[in-house]
Image (cartoon, rainbow, N blue to C red; front, side):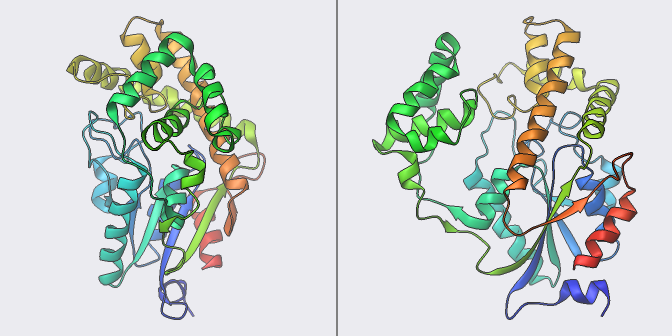
Length: 324
């Protein structure tokens, strides 16, 4: 049976879907595009920065030429002034998946936003919608006291949620405290009955791109960040800053790289410091992504390097096709 026939087959009555997950700069997009040459797939973006218009260079969004050959769904669907939640992604991605399957093709979801993949698999519990007033109040407190202070509050009201977080995980601390303020109940106690995920209704092949040599990944991250600067990343952030309706409390501006260059635009750091912090933040993001993936159930690990150098996209694709 050919790779295409294998990929197109169903398990029982379940339609197939493919996940391509991995840390930033591991070659996910290139692999997804290469797989499209061999399989009847359509691509869906799973990157929380790439959903925003005007966040192009710093989010490593595929360029127009690439998108003409391999269109990605769920790109450029929000203005940076708008929030986009995991619940929004779950609803949007499920609709796109159903549309692709109805057309007789296989949805391939590619990106590094691990929380998005998690909610897509498992669904979401019945948590309240965001309350901007409460979020603003928490942001103002954090600006004065620091997020570790708010983390101590979370330890008192929701120790289970706090135990899974670092004192500087600002967005998740904010959300857990917000939920407690709205409901009076710990968020961890509301998360026990998740509904709406895919895992019971689809045959999902989950590929995890795994760097073997951490120093190679770090070097690649630094090189890519410098390349983005050469391509005009700073100008992109300056344009966002000059709009006047955006601020650092918005998820788009808190994206890795954007937040650090935003501080430069605001006069809070020099450019070399901002770039250095952007590289460090990107490395930290990759570390968090790999931590997720090490504990990811049913992930098929695909090696992307041989310790001394990165494999070609064609070689990585070949590993994946053997697993389908």
